[in-house]
Image 1 (cartoon, rainbow, N blue to C red):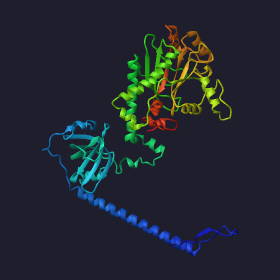
Image 2: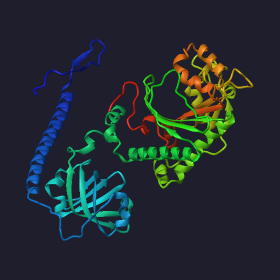
Image 3: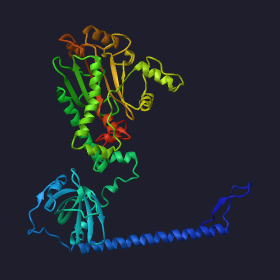
Image 4: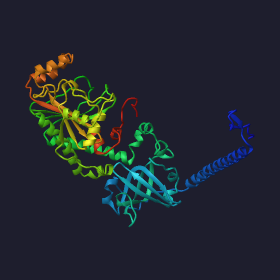
Length: 478
């Protein structure tokens, strides 16, 4: 105020603007004054809150809490062990997961230590001291107290709570805690920028625990079948470093740092000598089903259903489908390319139509015998039709391809022809060619994408949800 001349849209057709009417101006002035009063009241309240908080902090500095030496010495334990320590005094380290104040003399702290969640009850001076007023989520603290079963009709993680007799701060978090960085309205980029904080959440922690469990189940599966493990990190090139052992089965489980590709991922790879293509298909089916069975039989199986309550284990046998059958299926279901034409034999089937087919059939599929022209040169040709390769993709509903594999060329002359056809100088790959000269044998192998497998197992919306720190085009942090 004073207000300038205010114009509004003209009602007539001759002019675009006209001066606002006195009635409209009066209404808007009232709205302006009302909003002004609200703002002044808000600022006044905020100032009073600051003064009140400063006063409370000064009063809280006068309150001290001390460790009672007359109490029994506490056992230092993890939260997951507390069921064995009910009615006993313990000491627990952890982070403040949630915090709830109830009046001046009661405060509930939900503590997390990586093994579980614990409800801690702070009474009287414990929740009125200076540190308690500064406490925020993600602060690290140590609590002392007695593990007590919750009363009938009440609920708490594990069925018990810690009645605290003393606590101390290890490391404060900023006021507001993690909510200053993340909240329910945060967009994807904000979530990914703050992934280091996001993985502290319950859901993401469960996913990462499941990732660890699944990797262990893969190892147990392979070792139980007589495989050996080799760790390897390498850069993807035109020719992958596939190795196999003539006398036994050979496994490579490694994390591939892919510089030519936009995303980093964990690959589970196996190479198997003295097998047929049918053997390879059977082993893939056994791999997927046995790993799932091991997860469900583990002591952490409940964690899977916490993340994915509707999970159902795949049923054997998996459907076998040749590439040519897939082409026919797409035509029968009127699935076309962007230009309106049908997919023809010899063309690669993109992810979208392949996913449509897999989701419609709604069961795992072993998609076999792809044309040689769209597959890697080292794949073995089919004896019955040299246009095709003894290759396979394992397709699972809601995810798509999880495994890709094939029999490998094991004749050295045929391999040399493959180099020539692809215009590859065989000299740098002498070590690969030598494996066909010195005791060659029929062999095959495959690569399983661990993140894709977890995306299916845990029913996640995106593969980045199952990665510790997702990496893709335009994202290389944190």
